[in-house]
Image (cartoon, rainbow, N blue to C red):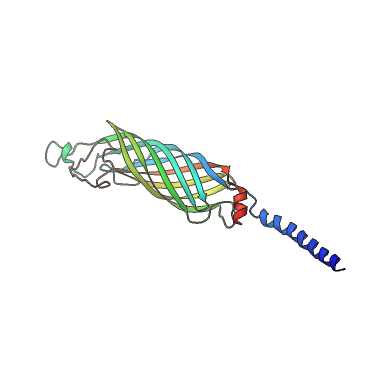
Length: 239
């Protein structure tokens, strides 16, 4: 009789475990992926000696992006963009010493520079990012901040290769389980004053890396696809 009662209790326990375990797994049964790859389009504008506004002279740009996701809050992004920087000094209330024939005179200066931008960035999500089915508490929409380093390859009157530091923010949204849409604004602070083809038109010499140099900003919409599934055994071991 004791054997029969013990066997019944054990049977009920195994039955409960069989029901409860799949239910717990079902809440996080969607796989997680390590990588994203995709492309984006947007606008780029120049900030320097011939333009001090974030809202002027936007030019089209496009690029490709790849990301490695360390966890639902952290990602590393490698991005290659191509676009144009444009600026002019016409109607500017500024005197440029090197381009003036006489005191107070100013010759109009204009340029159009082709620019390729390569960046490696660190992204931090304000909330855990995901569908919520692969990671408990994850949200399909999150703002994030980004900071990185890279190179700018510019071609105006001559070729220029410059160090640049991108810093900015964005928002990402999960359209589907493996499809992501992001909107991102970045300011790229360069170490060169020749992205516009003209170095130091004010005649101010500086030895500091980011003083009196050209900058540019980008705003981009990107679509990425996730791949390379994470190891489920590793996740189960942590649980």
